[in-house]
Amino acid sequence: MRENLLQIPLFAGLGAEELNGLFERIVFQTRSFGPNALVVSQGEECNSLMILTEGVVKGEMSGADGRNLKIEDLQAPTVLAPAFIFGKKNRYPVNIISYNEAHFIVIPKNELFTLFQHNASVLQNFLGMISSRAQFLTEKLQFHSFKSLKAKLAFYLFEEADGRSEFKLKHSQNELAELFGVARPSVGRTLMQLQEEQIVDVRYKKVKILDMLKLTRACNHLNL
Image 1 (cartoon, rainbow, N blue to C red):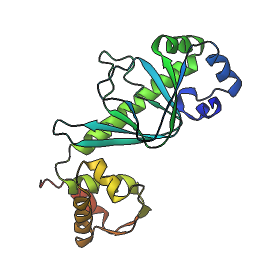
Image 2 (cartoon, rainbow, N blue to C red):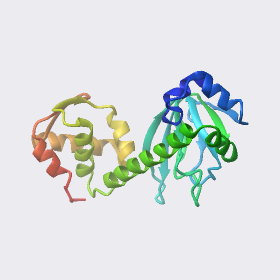
Image 3 (cartoon, rainbow, N blue to C red):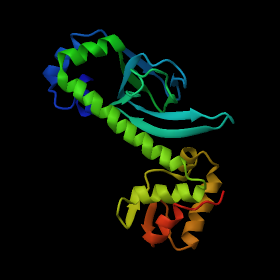
Image 4 (tube, one colour):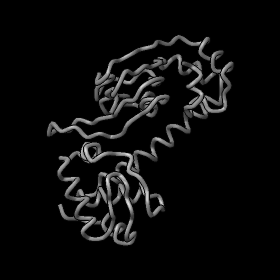
């Protein structure tokens, strides 16, 4: 199980023997959850580093209106909320829910310090992860600052295209609705609108960008 931890940025540059040696120096726990289980709740104190070793989970934020907004999916191996464990307000910003059976290694904060003291690369990797996470959250904030569903969907397609004229969607319309915090029919109608305006052509999950300039302009759509 530990060997797959070498795939995550926290342990980049380490060998299997070196990683095992580090884990022999610390006290940690293993935890498992079944499908659709609440792993951590929004607002729960973050005083340990949780490493997802097997399974897939999602981060979901509960709004004041009772609706849930999916923030992202996380697939093993990965680390949960590394930027919050040393924060002044060290509480999880979202609910973490398992899609399937999920397994974790849990490292208490003081044991994490021990890892840093014994291996400077792990400390450097951890700081890099926090920086990358800050960049991701900035992009996410920019995305949710868009007023209309059309602008959000256009920006999503623009980001997914990444300069390509054709690509395959990673998410279904149901997943997009969950991501945007809207009903599924709203996503379908907005996709149809983009097609009618000859901005994109969508067939199943295959997307063809017909007019990149119109797509970028749609990102600035302000109608509610």
